[in-house]
Length: 141
View 1: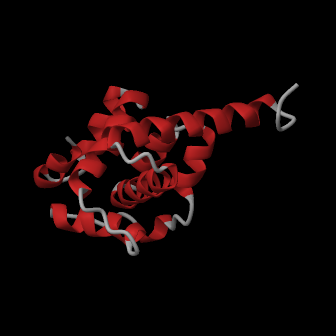
View 2: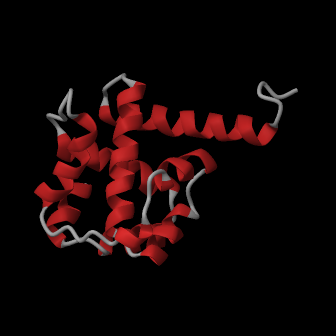
């Protein structure tokens, strides 16, 4: 018997927790709520920068609950938001950390990208990364 009544729901919760635990390990924070905010923030910056088709292609490879986090609050008519400088990317991520700013923003962003590279196909991640300037890609580790 499933803890929540449906195996698909249990699997989605388990997978999401596994991703967050993995990200928490990459950051060394031991703070799952903060890892969640980081994942959400970086994914929203990625999503908003990408064209609609590319954003949907990335989403198609995400687990169900993480895909929901990715799409949360998205207004495709206001995308893409083109970022040119690393500071712009970092500033958008920092918006999720107003009360406890990321002192290690480049390392934190690189941790999310590492997580995505582990779980999303290489070709898709190459497409996502290619959408950004060389300077911003340097943040991705």
